[in-house]
View (cartoon, rainbow, N blue to C red):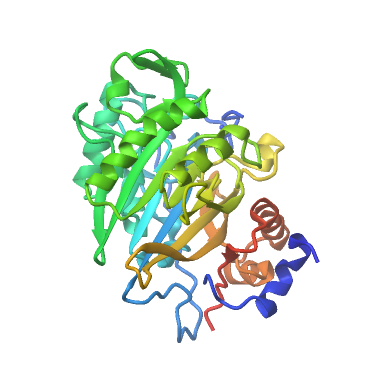
Length: 422
């Protein structure tokens, strides 16, 4: 029975072991911000009557990390979330998934936009979003935001620094960009007694001391954003290796890398990703979180060629929030994402390892709401029909989304989390 035919069977057979393409992505085109505010719709989280055991529960001696892929804001999104003149509220986008992030020890997201109040709000090809997006991320339970990607320089040096300032104002952690060009390119966090190292890098065209990304010459900005060579896995590795070594010297017992890499709109990892991933696992990296392709790609464990170490690679977590859609791009998969859920635990030798790796498929549900839209990120259960009923969503679209994700991941060691609350 192949992976695609099995997903309805999972509820019975799988125990809970591991519990813009441009931005044609304008939903309904608009040349300017609407003059009059529209009342924001209210969305309440769907709660099942009986919840004796949460599917998100972990033990006291375990660390649960959830991570998601690209978060983008296109024009139809900000217009839909406008609640007054120059005022926005994105919290409704995350209401159906916030329970997941509130229950973990650390939630990570990739912010594929700048937050620069001194510049106009813009969409593709240069993203700049309302600062209310960060309020919504904090409200949803995210604590660590990846800021190194191909849109980090979209509003210049001011945009890099203002994004950092807005994150700091909300006590949101960040990695991938720096105020001080001499700052370390990583951070080490202690969570439940575990010292975990984090670093975020994006691919770029490297030319000597400068880089070019999104047709922007860095002109010194590369000192504030972590970039690695997009054309050579060897060159990229030689950029990352000293950062990995520095994290280890700084006490990191487990290393997480967030990498913005791969080819856009491809559903499988390319040779560059595969080669670099193996080199990084050989170097002792425990978890690689991928983004940028806007599609869900495979998740796999890789064994080190040097020792007994094993690491998990999620080549691309897809889109967590955007207006990239099949009906706009004529391309399935851009509405899909995964919440990658990893549980760490010390073994009897006091080595921190991944005890459990799971994924929760997500789908961006967009429905018409007056002149604009209602956007909600929905977690998809093993049986998509139950998700359709729970959220009054279209079962056909949820099923197609789940099938896309299962086809991409197709792993015997990484399982879909059963969301049945009863």
